[in-house]
Image (cartoon, rainbow, N blue to C red; front, side, top):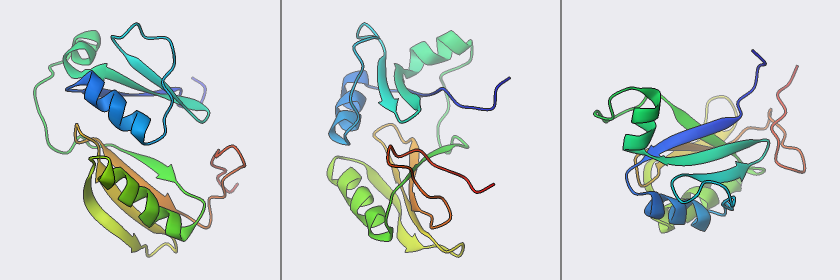
Length: 141
């Protein structure tokens, strides 16, 4: 297996609501999907919204359950102040702030919000993870 992530798929309760939320955050929906699924280009990968029941059926697992899902997506920003700004924007658009931005012991700054379906997003600035012009994250060797 090649070491990369191609898509992150979120099971959502209301596809139209989630699409509107992510579009308000600045994601641009692709023309594919036929209204049953929504794909967004997210740098070198894609973010996908799929109705929760349909995603569970596709994976042949139960859609029941809630609470912490054991995963968080992260969006790194270019500046320390960008963390606060991105979290404030998400909150204005309907996200729930679960951890306000704070300076981190590793030298950066981060905070978390939950999207309308409770999926966690970390917003972080890490001085050791420079972002390319296109937003691609470059890990140190």
